[in-house]
Image (cartoon, rainbow, N blue to C red; front, top):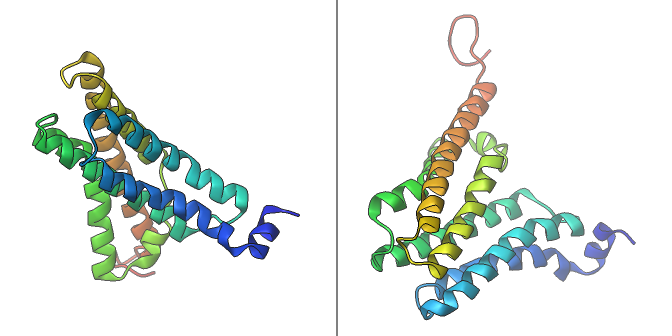
Length: 196
């Protein structure tokens, strides 16, 4: 029996990847309130859920566009909760938070544009990008480093710089891919006007 058949016979299986994604929302709620030492566990659980939800969906044959966007949304919820907590605690500065969330801000602007203009196809066919995945992975490593080492340590500063750089490059990558996708949906005719 293949995974797709198994999922069809046991509908609850199709919810397993989403449950792993939603687990990050619980970890986002816990991060600000748990004692400092327990934050290592919170980040590890969130990171493991991020690594396994997509793998689980593919292995079970239930990967979907909605599931992929739920995965990305819960990543952002956890990142914002963690960074807000660290900002209030004085561990990171506002400009560092802005740098680290650069990719997420660009994606949010793209989503707002799509919603206002009803250009669903351009957004629906914008897949997860390698640079975006690397930024997310680097963010989890950064959070882990921050809760283990002193904020002024070389390791934390290097990870801050590296993750910030990845976030900016990923933002540019997402924006350029989205613009190319829009142009593909709106080919320019010989008169220079949209539509062919």
